[in-house]
Length: 117
Image (tube, rainbow, N blue to C red; front, side, top):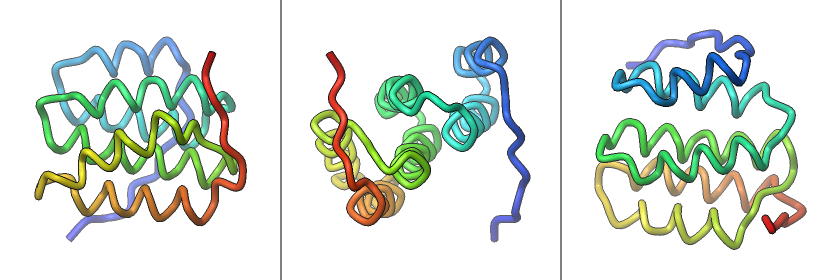
């Protein structure tokens, strides 16, 4: 059973240091705090997409959750990059649930598609 944990805003400097950490808990906390509070959804999306390549399944799963949060909070997502990346996670039993949840959030909340140049 998981418990609710308040995730406060974080500075980009602190978040970047945590994202570069070897501690999976620090990495997951950083990406969630960014997804929930950073005003630049595209910047956070880039970091979350990078984390989807982590060898750690927990990091990949939480990065997927972060992408769903970005879609919900900002009402937009870079679907050309995000959807295929999440679909690849559905092939793995360790990440399928979180990836499907994020894809559902995107379908429900992202009324606008953004693209990166």
